[in-house]
Length: 530
Image (cartoon, rainbow, N blue to C red; front, side, top):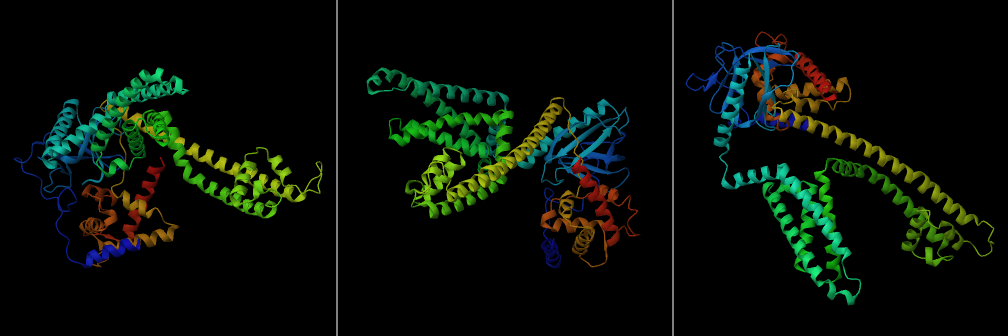
Protein backbone atom coordinates (compact mmCIF):
# COMPACT_ATOMS: atom_id res chain seq x y z
CA UNK A 1 0.00 0.00 0.00
CA UNK A 2 2.90 2.36 0.73
CA UNK A 3 4.30 1.69 -2.73
CA UNK A 4 0.87 2.33 -4.22
CA UNK A 5 0.51 5.63 -2.35
CA UNK A 6 4.05 6.70 -3.23
CA UNK A 7 3.44 5.89 -6.89
CA UNK A 8 0.24 7.92 -6.88
CA UNK A 9 1.96 10.93 -5.28
CA UNK A 10 4.82 10.77 -7.74
CA UNK A 11 2.34 10.83 -10.59
CA UNK A 12 0.41 13.64 -8.96
CA UNK A 13 3.56 15.73 -8.43
CA UNK A 14 4.89 15.04 -11.90
CA UNK A 15 3.74 16.34 -15.29
CA UNK A 16 0.18 15.92 -16.46
CA UNK A 17 -0.32 12.46 -18.01
CA UNK A 18 -0.92 12.20 -21.71
CA UNK A 19 -4.43 11.88 -23.08
CA UNK A 20 -5.50 8.24 -23.27
CA UNK A 21 -7.75 6.65 -25.84
CA UNK A 22 -11.26 5.43 -25.18
CA UNK A 23 -10.17 1.80 -25.05
CA UNK A 24 -8.03 2.51 -21.98
CA UNK A 25 -9.87 5.08 -19.89
CA UNK A 26 -11.59 8.40 -20.22
CA UNK A 27 -12.92 10.76 -17.59
CA UNK A 28 -14.89 13.28 -19.58
CA UNK A 29 -17.60 11.38 -21.44
CA UNK A 30 -18.93 14.50 -23.10
CA UNK A 31 -22.40 15.42 -24.25
CA UNK A 32 -25.10 13.09 -25.47
CA UNK A 33 -24.61 12.39 -29.20
CA UNK A 34 -26.80 14.28 -31.62
CA UNK A 35 -29.70 12.58 -33.38
CA UNK A 36 -27.63 12.28 -36.57
CA UNK A 37 -24.96 10.36 -34.64
CA UNK A 38 -27.44 7.98 -33.04
CA UNK A 39 -28.23 4.76 -34.88
CA UNK A 40 -30.91 3.81 -32.33
CA UNK A 41 -32.22 5.43 -29.15
CA UNK A 42 -34.78 4.81 -26.42
CA UNK A 43 -36.94 7.85 -27.09
CA UNK A 44 -40.56 6.80 -26.55
CA UNK A 45 -39.49 3.60 -24.78
CA UNK A 46 -39.35 3.00 -21.03
CA UNK A 47 -35.93 1.45 -20.50
CA UNK A 48 -34.54 0.91 -16.99
CA UNK A 49 -31.01 0.18 -15.82
CA UNK A 50 -30.11 -1.82 -12.73
CA UNK A 51 -28.11 0.42 -10.38
CA UNK A 52 -26.79 -1.51 -7.41
CA UNK A 53 -28.39 -4.74 -6.24
CA UNK A 54 -32.10 -4.07 -6.85
CA UNK A 55 -32.50 -0.38 -7.72
CA UNK A 56 -34.02 0.01 -11.19
CA UNK A 57 -33.80 3.55 -12.59
CA UNK A 58 -35.06 4.97 -15.84
CA UNK A 59 -32.30 5.77 -18.33
CA UNK A 60 -31.84 7.08 -21.85
CA UNK A 61 -29.64 4.83 -23.99
CA UNK A 62 -28.49 5.23 -27.56
CA UNK A 63 -26.37 3.25 -30.00
CA UNK A 64 -23.71 5.11 -31.98
CA UNK A 65 -21.13 3.69 -34.35
CA UNK A 66 -18.80 2.52 -31.58
CA UNK A 67 -20.57 3.11 -28.25
CA UNK A 68 -23.68 2.26 -26.28
CA UNK A 69 -24.30 5.59 -24.55
CA UNK A 70 -26.13 5.86 -21.22
CA UNK A 71 -27.45 9.05 -19.60
CA UNK A 72 -30.15 10.22 -17.22
CA UNK A 73 -33.51 11.07 -18.77
CA UNK A 74 -33.37 14.64 -20.05
CA UNK A 75 -29.67 15.06 -19.22
CA UNK A 76 -27.27 16.63 -21.70
CA UNK A 77 -24.16 14.75 -20.59
CA UNK A 78 -23.29 11.07 -20.80
CA UNK A 79 -23.17 9.29 -17.44
CA UNK A 80 -21.65 6.05 -18.74
CA UNK A 81 -20.83 4.33 -22.00
CA UNK A 82 -19.92 0.89 -23.30
CA UNK A 83 -17.51 0.47 -26.24
CA UNK A 84 -19.37 -1.79 -28.63
CA UNK A 85 -16.14 -3.41 -29.81
CA UNK A 86 -15.72 -4.77 -26.25
CA UNK A 87 -19.21 -6.32 -25.98
CA UNK A 88 -18.94 -10.09 -25.63
CA UNK A 89 -22.63 -11.01 -25.36
CA UNK A 90 -26.12 -9.59 -25.02
CA UNK A 91 -28.75 -12.03 -23.79
CA UNK A 92 -31.90 -12.37 -21.74
CA UNK A 93 -31.62 -12.97 -18.02
CA UNK A 94 -33.07 -16.27 -16.76
CA UNK A 95 -35.07 -14.73 -13.91
CA UNK A 96 -35.11 -11.43 -12.07
CA UNK A 97 -37.37 -11.40 -9.01
CA UNK A 98 -37.15 -7.62 -8.66
CA UNK A 99 -38.32 -6.96 -12.24
CA UNK A 100 -42.01 -6.54 -12.97
CA UNK A 101 -43.56 -9.63 -14.48
CA UNK A 102 -44.46 -7.78 -17.69
CA UNK A 103 -40.89 -6.49 -18.26
CA UNK A 104 -37.95 -8.35 -19.80
CA UNK A 105 -34.41 -7.97 -18.46
CA UNK A 106 -31.25 -8.48 -20.50
CA UNK A 107 -27.56 -8.12 -19.76
CA UNK A 108 -24.71 -6.67 -21.81
CA UNK A 109 -21.35 -8.25 -20.96
CA UNK A 110 -17.95 -6.65 -21.66
CA UNK A 111 -14.46 -8.10 -21.96
CA UNK A 112 -12.21 -8.38 -18.92
CA UNK A 113 -9.44 -5.82 -18.82
CA UNK A 114 -11.26 -3.49 -21.22
CA UNK A 115 -12.68 -0.01 -20.77
CA UNK A 116 -15.46 -1.22 -18.46
CA UNK A 117 -13.32 -3.84 -16.73
CA UNK A 118 -15.51 -6.82 -17.62
CA UNK A 119 -18.62 -5.39 -15.95
CA UNK A 120 -22.17 -6.45 -16.72
CA UNK A 121 -24.84 -3.86 -17.56
CA UNK A 122 -28.42 -4.95 -16.94
CA UNK A 123 -31.38 -3.27 -18.61
CA UNK A 124 -35.11 -4.01 -18.74
CA UNK A 125 -37.60 -3.28 -21.50
CA UNK A 126 -41.38 -3.43 -21.72
CA UNK A 127 -42.02 -6.27 -24.16
CA UNK A 128 -40.52 -8.97 -26.35
CA UNK A 129 -40.34 -6.76 -29.45
CA UNK A 130 -38.22 -4.18 -27.66
CA UNK A 131 -35.98 -6.92 -26.26
CA UNK A 132 -35.34 -8.42 -29.70
CA UNK A 133 -34.88 -4.99 -31.26
CA UNK A 134 -32.28 -3.83 -28.74
CA UNK A 135 -30.32 -7.08 -28.42
CA UNK A 136 -30.11 -7.56 -32.18
CA UNK A 137 -29.10 -3.94 -32.73
CA UNK A 138 -26.40 -4.11 -30.03
CA UNK A 139 -24.95 -7.39 -31.29
CA UNK A 140 -25.04 -6.28 -34.93
CA UNK A 141 -23.31 -2.96 -34.28
CA UNK A 142 -20.87 -4.63 -31.87
CA UNK A 143 -19.74 -6.98 -34.64
CA UNK A 144 -19.33 -4.07 -37.07
CA UNK A 145 -17.48 -1.96 -34.51
CA UNK A 146 -15.18 -4.82 -33.49
CA UNK A 147 -14.24 -5.47 -37.09
CA UNK A 148 -13.48 -1.78 -37.71
CA UNK A 149 -11.73 -1.24 -34.39
CA UNK A 150 -9.56 -4.33 -34.40
CA UNK A 151 -8.74 -4.27 -38.11
CA UNK A 152 -7.26 -7.75 -37.91
CA UNK A 153 -4.58 -8.82 -40.33
CA UNK A 154 -4.90 -11.99 -42.38
CA UNK A 155 -2.71 -13.84 -39.88
CA UNK A 156 -4.89 -12.77 -36.93
CA UNK A 157 -8.02 -13.84 -38.78
CA UNK A 158 -6.48 -17.24 -39.45
CA UNK A 159 -5.54 -17.56 -35.77
CA UNK A 160 -9.14 -16.89 -34.75
CA UNK A 161 -10.41 -19.47 -37.23
CA UNK A 162 -7.91 -22.01 -35.92
CA UNK A 163 -9.04 -21.34 -32.34
CA UNK A 164 -12.67 -21.79 -33.36
CA UNK A 165 -11.78 -25.08 -35.05
CA UNK A 166 -10.08 -26.40 -31.91
CA UNK A 167 -13.16 -25.57 -29.82
CA UNK A 168 -15.58 -27.51 -32.01
CA UNK A 169 -16.98 -30.71 -30.50
CA UNK A 170 -16.46 -32.61 -33.77
CA UNK A 171 -12.75 -31.82 -33.67
CA UNK A 172 -12.48 -32.86 -30.02
CA UNK A 173 -14.33 -36.13 -30.62
CA UNK A 174 -12.26 -36.99 -33.71
CA UNK A 175 -8.91 -36.66 -31.97
CA UNK A 176 -10.16 -38.43 -28.86
CA UNK A 177 -11.01 -41.36 -31.13
CA UNK A 178 -7.57 -41.15 -32.78
CA UNK A 179 -5.84 -41.21 -29.39
CA UNK A 180 -7.69 -44.38 -28.38
CA UNK A 181 -7.06 -45.97 -31.78
CA UNK A 182 -3.36 -45.14 -31.60
CA UNK A 183 -3.15 -46.67 -28.12
CA UNK A 184 -4.75 -49.90 -29.34
CA UNK A 185 -2.40 -50.07 -32.35
CA UNK A 186 0.63 -49.59 -30.08
CA UNK A 187 -0.53 -52.45 -27.86
CA UNK A 188 -1.03 -54.69 -30.91
CA UNK A 189 2.42 -53.74 -32.16
CA UNK A 190 4.01 -54.71 -28.84
CA UNK A 191 2.10 -58.01 -28.83
CA UNK A 192 3.25 -58.83 -32.37
CA UNK A 193 6.91 -57.97 -31.70
CA UNK A 194 9.34 -60.87 -32.53
CA UNK A 195 10.56 -62.83 -29.51
CA UNK A 196 13.60 -64.33 -31.28
CA UNK A 197 15.81 -63.78 -34.29
CA UNK A 198 14.14 -66.68 -36.10
CA UNK A 199 10.79 -65.00 -36.10
CA UNK A 200 11.99 -61.65 -37.37
CA UNK A 201 11.44 -62.44 -41.05
CA UNK A 202 7.90 -63.66 -40.41
CA UNK A 203 6.95 -60.29 -38.89
CA UNK A 204 8.36 -57.98 -41.59
CA UNK A 205 4.92 -57.49 -43.11
CA UNK A 206 3.45 -56.67 -39.71
CA UNK A 207 6.25 -54.20 -39.02
CA UNK A 208 5.53 -52.40 -42.27
CA UNK A 209 1.83 -52.13 -41.44
CA UNK A 210 2.47 -50.86 -37.92
CA UNK A 211 5.06 -48.38 -39.19
CA UNK A 212 2.49 -47.04 -41.68
CA UNK A 213 -0.08 -46.65 -38.91
CA UNK A 214 2.50 -44.94 -36.72
CA UNK A 215 3.40 -42.56 -39.53
CA UNK A 216 -0.25 -41.63 -40.12
CA UNK A 217 -1.01 -41.07 -36.42
CA UNK A 218 2.15 -39.03 -35.92
CA UNK A 219 1.32 -36.82 -38.91
CA UNK A 220 -2.23 -36.20 -37.69
CA UNK A 221 -1.14 -35.37 -34.15
CA UNK A 222 1.62 -33.13 -35.48
CA UNK A 223 -0.95 -31.22 -37.56
CA UNK A 224 -3.17 -30.83 -34.51
CA UNK A 225 -0.23 -29.57 -32.45
CA UNK A 226 0.73 -27.08 -35.17
CA UNK A 227 -2.82 -25.71 -35.35
CA UNK A 228 -2.95 -25.37 -31.57
CA UNK A 229 0.45 -23.68 -31.50
CA UNK A 230 -0.61 -21.27 -34.25
CA UNK A 231 -3.95 -20.47 -32.59
CA UNK A 232 -2.29 -19.75 -29.21
CA UNK A 233 0.92 -18.14 -30.40
CA UNK A 234 3.35 -17.93 -28.54
CA UNK A 235 3.39 -17.57 -24.77
CA UNK A 236 -0.27 -18.63 -24.25
CA UNK A 237 0.57 -22.01 -25.74
CA UNK A 238 3.31 -22.78 -23.21
CA UNK A 239 1.24 -21.56 -20.27
CA UNK A 240 -0.79 -24.77 -20.52
CA UNK A 241 0.87 -27.85 -19.06
CA UNK A 242 -1.21 -30.07 -21.37
CA UNK A 243 0.18 -28.27 -24.43
CA UNK A 244 3.75 -28.79 -23.21
CA UNK A 245 3.00 -32.48 -22.65
CA UNK A 246 1.56 -32.76 -26.18
CA UNK A 247 4.67 -31.09 -27.59
CA UNK A 248 7.01 -33.56 -25.86
CA UNK A 249 5.02 -36.64 -26.91
CA UNK A 250 4.66 -35.52 -30.54
CA UNK A 251 8.37 -34.60 -30.71
CA UNK A 252 9.35 -38.07 -29.42
CA UNK A 253 6.97 -39.68 -31.92
CA UNK A 254 8.48 -37.76 -34.84
CA UNK A 255 11.98 -38.67 -33.67
CA UNK A 256 11.11 -42.37 -33.43
CA UNK A 257 9.48 -42.33 -36.88
CA UNK A 258 12.56 -40.74 -38.43
CA UNK A 259 14.86 -43.35 -36.83
CA UNK A 260 12.86 -46.62 -36.76
CA UNK A 261 15.94 -48.89 -36.52
CA UNK A 262 18.04 -46.94 -34.08
CA UNK A 263 19.91 -48.01 -30.95
CA UNK A 264 18.31 -49.20 -27.73
CA UNK A 265 17.71 -45.71 -26.30
CA UNK A 266 15.65 -44.82 -29.38
CA UNK A 267 13.54 -47.95 -28.85
CA UNK A 268 12.94 -46.78 -25.28
CA UNK A 269 11.88 -43.36 -26.56
CA UNK A 270 9.51 -45.08 -28.99
CA UNK A 271 7.66 -46.66 -26.07
CA UNK A 272 6.94 -43.13 -24.77
CA UNK A 273 4.28 -42.90 -27.45
CA UNK A 274 2.02 -44.92 -25.16
CA UNK A 275 1.80 -41.87 -22.91
CA UNK A 276 -0.24 -40.23 -25.65
CA UNK A 277 -3.29 -41.81 -24.04
CA UNK A 278 -2.76 -39.39 -21.14
CA UNK A 279 -3.85 -36.61 -23.50
CA UNK A 280 -7.31 -38.12 -23.26
CA UNK A 281 -7.46 -36.96 -19.64
CA UNK A 282 -7.99 -33.32 -20.57
CA UNK A 283 -10.86 -34.25 -22.89
CA UNK A 284 -12.75 -36.31 -20.26
CA UNK A 285 -13.97 -34.25 -17.33
CA UNK A 286 -13.77 -37.02 -14.71
CA UNK A 287 -10.18 -37.95 -15.55
CA UNK A 288 -9.21 -34.31 -15.87
CA UNK A 289 -10.64 -33.63 -12.41
CA UNK A 290 -8.56 -36.41 -10.85
CA UNK A 291 -5.34 -35.33 -12.55
CA UNK A 292 -5.89 -31.66 -11.72
CA UNK A 293 -6.65 -32.52 -8.09
CA UNK A 294 -3.48 -34.60 -7.76
CA UNK A 295 -1.34 -31.86 -9.31
CA UNK A 296 -2.94 -29.23 -7.07
CA UNK A 297 -2.23 -31.33 -3.95
CA UNK A 298 1.39 -32.15 -4.82
CA UNK A 299 2.98 -28.80 -3.80
CA UNK A 300 1.61 -29.09 -0.27
CA UNK A 301 2.43 -32.81 0.03
CA UNK A 302 5.98 -32.08 -1.17
CA UNK A 303 6.73 -30.43 2.18
CA UNK A 304 5.85 -33.68 3.94
CA UNK A 305 8.08 -35.66 1.57
CA UNK A 306 10.96 -33.25 2.24
CA UNK A 307 10.60 -33.82 5.99
CA UNK A 308 10.41 -37.58 5.46
CA UNK A 309 13.52 -37.48 3.25
CA UNK A 310 15.51 -35.48 5.80
CA UNK A 311 14.64 -37.92 8.60
CA UNK A 312 15.58 -40.86 6.35
CA UNK A 313 18.94 -39.22 5.56
CA UNK A 314 19.63 -38.72 9.27
CA UNK A 315 18.91 -42.41 9.94
CA UNK A 316 21.12 -43.38 6.97
CA UNK A 317 24.06 -41.45 8.40
CA UNK A 318 23.51 -42.94 11.86
CA UNK A 319 23.13 -46.43 10.39
CA UNK A 320 26.37 -46.12 8.45
CA UNK A 321 28.20 -45.04 11.60
CA UNK A 322 26.79 -47.91 13.67
CA UNK A 323 26.69 -50.86 11.26
CA UNK A 324 29.24 -50.23 8.47
CA UNK A 325 31.63 -52.79 9.95
CA UNK A 326 28.99 -55.34 10.88
CA UNK A 327 27.33 -55.36 7.44
CA UNK A 328 29.31 -53.55 4.70
CA UNK A 329 26.86 -54.85 2.08
CA UNK A 330 23.98 -52.94 3.71
CA UNK A 331 25.61 -49.96 5.45
CA UNK A 332 29.14 -49.80 4.03
CA UNK A 333 28.57 -46.47 2.22
CA UNK A 334 26.04 -43.69 2.50
CA UNK A 335 24.30 -44.80 -0.72
CA UNK A 336 23.96 -48.39 0.53
CA UNK A 337 22.79 -47.16 3.91
CA UNK A 338 20.13 -44.89 2.39
CA UNK A 339 18.98 -47.71 0.11
CA UNK A 340 18.69 -50.07 3.10
CA UNK A 341 16.69 -47.46 5.02
CA UNK A 342 14.29 -47.24 2.08
CA UNK A 343 13.92 -51.02 2.09
CA UNK A 344 13.11 -50.99 5.81
CA UNK A 345 10.46 -48.28 5.30
CA UNK A 346 8.72 -50.52 2.77
CA UNK A 347 8.51 -53.22 5.53
CA UNK A 348 10.24 -55.58 3.12
CA UNK A 349 12.35 -58.20 4.91
CA UNK A 350 13.40 -55.73 7.57
CA UNK A 351 13.97 -58.58 10.02
CA UNK A 352 16.72 -59.97 7.77
CA UNK A 353 18.44 -56.59 7.85
CA UNK A 354 18.22 -56.59 11.63
CA UNK A 355 19.78 -60.05 11.73
CA UNK A 356 22.56 -58.97 9.37
CA UNK A 357 23.75 -56.18 11.72
CA UNK A 358 23.38 -58.15 14.97
CA UNK A 359 26.59 -58.49 16.99
CA UNK A 360 28.23 -61.97 16.90
CA UNK A 361 27.96 -62.49 20.66
CA UNK A 362 24.16 -62.47 20.49
CA UNK A 363 22.43 -65.73 19.69
CA UNK A 364 19.52 -66.41 17.35
CA UNK A 365 16.95 -65.86 20.05
CA UNK A 366 18.72 -62.93 21.70
CA UNK A 367 17.95 -59.27 21.03
CA UNK A 368 20.79 -56.85 20.26
CA UNK A 369 19.61 -53.53 21.80
CA UNK A 370 21.51 -51.30 19.36
CA UNK A 371 19.90 -52.43 16.06
CA UNK A 372 16.61 -53.07 17.86
CA UNK A 373 16.34 -49.45 19.05
CA UNK A 374 17.56 -48.17 15.68
CA UNK A 375 15.09 -50.06 13.50
CA UNK A 376 12.12 -49.77 15.87
CA UNK A 377 12.55 -45.99 16.13
CA UNK A 378 13.00 -45.78 12.35
CA UNK A 379 9.76 -47.67 11.66
CA UNK A 380 7.76 -45.82 14.32
CA UNK A 381 8.91 -42.34 13.27
CA UNK A 382 8.92 -42.76 9.51
CA UNK A 383 6.47 -45.56 8.67
CA UNK A 384 3.91 -45.15 11.42
CA UNK A 385 3.94 -41.36 11.81
CA UNK A 386 5.45 -39.38 8.92
CA UNK A 387 4.16 -41.53 6.08
CA UNK A 388 0.69 -41.55 7.62
CA UNK A 389 0.79 -37.77 8.01
CA UNK A 390 1.84 -37.34 4.39
CA UNK A 391 -0.98 -39.66 3.28
CA UNK A 392 -3.51 -37.74 5.37
CA UNK A 393 -2.36 -34.40 3.93
CA UNK A 394 -2.52 -35.84 0.41
CA UNK A 395 -6.06 -37.15 0.91
CA UNK A 396 -7.23 -33.88 2.50
CA UNK A 397 -5.84 -31.67 -0.24
CA UNK A 398 -6.95 -34.08 -2.92
CA UNK A 399 -10.52 -33.91 -1.56
CA UNK A 400 -10.44 -30.11 -1.52
CA UNK A 401 -9.06 -29.94 -5.04
CA UNK A 402 -11.74 -32.36 -6.25
CA UNK A 403 -14.44 -30.18 -4.73
CA UNK A 404 -13.00 -27.10 -6.46
CA UNK A 405 -12.89 -28.93 -9.77
CA UNK A 406 -16.44 -30.19 -9.33
CA UNK A 407 -17.72 -26.70 -8.48
CA UNK A 408 -15.96 -25.28 -11.54
CA UNK A 409 -17.39 -28.08 -13.68
CA UNK A 410 -20.91 -27.31 -12.41
CA UNK A 411 -20.40 -23.61 -13.19
CA UNK A 412 -19.17 -24.43 -16.70
CA UNK A 413 -22.09 -26.81 -17.23
CA UNK A 414 -24.57 -24.19 -16.03
CA UNK A 415 -23.03 -21.56 -18.33
CA UNK A 416 -23.20 -23.94 -21.29
CA UNK A 417 -26.85 -24.73 -20.46
CA UNK A 418 -27.74 -21.04 -20.27
CA UNK A 419 -25.81 -20.33 -23.45
CA UNK A 420 -27.72 -23.06 -25.30
CA UNK A 421 -31.00 -21.40 -24.23
CA UNK A 422 -29.79 -17.94 -25.23
CA UNK A 423 -29.55 -16.81 -21.59
CA UNK A 424 -26.69 -15.60 -19.43
CA UNK A 425 -25.78 -15.58 -15.76
CA UNK A 426 -25.56 -12.38 -13.77
CA UNK A 427 -22.40 -11.92 -11.70
CA UNK A 428 -22.82 -8.93 -9.42
CA UNK A 429 -19.45 -7.26 -9.08
CA UNK A 430 -18.44 -3.99 -7.50
CA UNK A 431 -16.93 -1.46 -9.93
CA UNK A 432 -14.03 -0.99 -7.48
CA UNK A 433 -13.46 -4.72 -6.88
CA UNK A 434 -9.62 -4.58 -7.34
CA UNK A 435 -9.41 -1.84 -4.71
CA UNK A 436 -11.63 -3.79 -2.31
CA UNK A 437 -9.56 -6.95 -2.77
CA UNK A 438 -6.50 -4.94 -1.75
CA UNK A 439 -8.20 -3.46 1.30
CA UNK A 440 -9.50 -6.88 2.36
CA UNK A 441 -5.99 -7.83 3.53
CA UNK A 442 -6.32 -5.73 6.69
CA UNK A 443 -5.47 -7.16 10.13
CA UNK A 444 -7.96 -5.28 12.30
CA UNK A 445 -10.32 -2.31 12.24
CA UNK A 446 -7.59 0.22 13.01
CA UNK A 447 -5.40 -1.17 10.25
CA UNK A 448 -8.27 -0.88 7.77
CA UNK A 449 -8.90 2.75 8.79
CA UNK A 450 -5.22 3.57 8.33
CA UNK A 451 -5.19 1.97 4.88
CA UNK A 452 -8.26 3.96 3.82
CA UNK A 453 -6.75 7.16 5.24
CA UNK A 454 -3.53 6.65 3.24
CA UNK A 455 -5.58 5.99 0.13
CA UNK A 456 -7.60 9.16 0.69
CA UNK A 457 -4.41 11.21 1.07
CA UNK A 458 -3.03 9.70 -2.14
CA UNK A 459 -6.21 10.50 -4.10
CA UNK A 460 -6.50 14.02 -2.65
CA UNK A 461 -3.81 15.47 -4.89
CA UNK A 462 -4.68 19.14 -4.22
CA UNK A 463 -4.66 18.52 -0.43
CA UNK A 464 -8.05 20.19 -0.14
CA UNK A 465 -9.40 17.64 2.34
CA UNK A 466 -12.20 16.53 -0.01
CA UNK A 467 -12.60 14.24 -2.99
CA UNK A 468 -14.73 15.10 -5.98
CA UNK A 469 -15.91 12.57 -8.55
CA UNK A 470 -13.23 13.65 -11.02
CA UNK A 471 -10.48 13.51 -8.37
CA UNK A 472 -11.55 9.99 -7.38
CA UNK A 473 -11.67 8.59 -10.91
CA UNK A 474 -8.52 10.45 -12.00
CA UNK A 475 -6.58 9.26 -8.94
CA UNK A 476 -7.60 5.63 -9.39
CA UNK A 477 -6.61 5.80 -13.06
CA UNK A 478 -3.13 7.06 -12.13
CA UNK A 479 -2.52 4.13 -9.77
CA UNK A 480 -1.15 1.23 -11.76
CA UNK A 481 -2.81 -1.40 -9.55
CA UNK A 482 -6.26 0.14 -10.04
CA UNK A 483 -5.94 1.56 -13.54
CA UNK A 484 -8.58 -0.89 -14.80
CA UNK A 485 -11.26 0.57 -12.51
CA UNK A 486 -13.88 2.55 -14.41
CA UNK A 487 -16.22 4.39 -12.07
CA UNK A 488 -19.30 5.87 -13.71
CA UNK A 489 -21.47 8.66 -12.35
CA UNK A 490 -24.21 6.11 -11.67
CA UNK A 491 -21.77 4.14 -9.51
CA UNK A 492 -20.71 7.27 -7.64
CA UNK A 493 -24.35 8.25 -7.17
CA UNK A 494 -25.19 4.83 -5.71
CA UNK A 495 -22.16 4.59 -3.40
CA UNK A 496 -22.78 8.06 -1.97
CA UNK A 497 -26.46 7.22 -1.31
CA UNK A 498 -27.75 9.65 -3.95
CA UNK A 499 -24.97 12.07 -2.89
CA UNK A 500 -26.39 12.27 0.64
CA UNK A 501 -22.86 11.62 1.95
CA UNK A 502 -21.40 14.49 -0.12
CA UNK A 503 -21.13 18.12 0.90
CA UNK A 504 -22.77 21.05 -0.87
CA UNK A 505 -20.20 20.89 -3.68
CA UNK A 506 -20.72 17.18 -4.26
CA UNK A 507 -17.38 16.17 -2.67
CA UNK A 508 -16.48 13.54 -0.08
CA UNK A 509 -14.61 14.15 3.13
CA UNK A 510 -12.32 11.57 4.74
CA UNK A 511 -14.96 10.30 7.17
CA UNK A 512 -17.58 9.77 4.47
CA UNK A 513 -14.97 8.20 2.16
CA UNK A 514 -14.04 5.70 4.88
CA UNK A 515 -17.70 4.88 5.53
CA UNK A 516 -18.34 4.27 1.82
CA UNK A 517 -15.34 1.96 1.40
CA UNK A 518 -16.21 -0.04 4.51
CA UNK A 519 -19.80 -0.50 3.30
CA UNK A 520 -18.59 -1.50 -0.17
CA UNK A 521 -16.02 -3.87 1.34
CA UNK A 522 -18.65 -5.58 3.49
CA UNK A 523 -20.96 -6.02 0.51
CA UNK A 524 -18.07 -7.22 -1.66
CA UNK A 525 -16.99 -9.89 0.85
CA UNK A 526 -20.58 -11.10 1.28
CA UNK A 527 -20.88 -11.53 -2.49
CA UNK A 528 -17.59 -13.44 -2.68
CA UNK A 529 -18.64 -15.68 0.21
CA UNK A 530 -21.96 -16.48 -1.45
